[in-house]
Image (cartoon, rainbow, N blue to C red; front, side):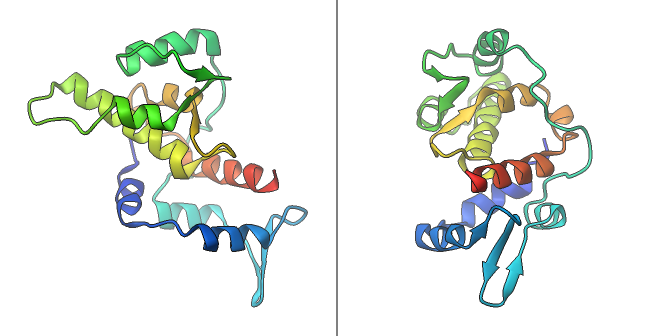
Amino acid sequence: ASFWHVATIGRRCKFDPKCISALIERWRPETYTFHLPCGECIITLEDVQLQLGLSVDGSALTESFNLLIGKSYASYDLLGVILDNIYEGRIEMGWLRDTFPKPRNDSTEIERIRYARAYIFEMIGGYLMPDLSQNLVHLRCLLKLVYFRVAGEFSWGSTMLATLDREMCR
């Protein structure tokens, strides 16, 4: 699904809340840039592609599904569980971690696929496209993980950058 590079970065990366706060304080929404002592800085699509390995080519991610239909489909068919903790189309990250522990050696292929979906879904909501809540992830991303090969053809990088800009302006 084209998330391997991001997954390996996430294992080695430690977030420093003080550093992130300092960077956020230097964000200027009117120019979409960070104002640093050495000058202005912006995150480009090329940065996203080179540093995170996310595709910036391909189909755009859109909200082209009915969320009411999406809830039951996403939760049962894609993850094998029925969600009872949906908040405005989003689910809790902690629930994902608790419900999908690392698969055992004797797990079935379907269990491994469901774990992979949950892992990618958590990665998307955790640090690729987090919202202000920092503990909820939107189901629309899960619905793009139905087929891993197709998911790899989406422009995850441009969606991630657009989400970053939107959240920074909030």
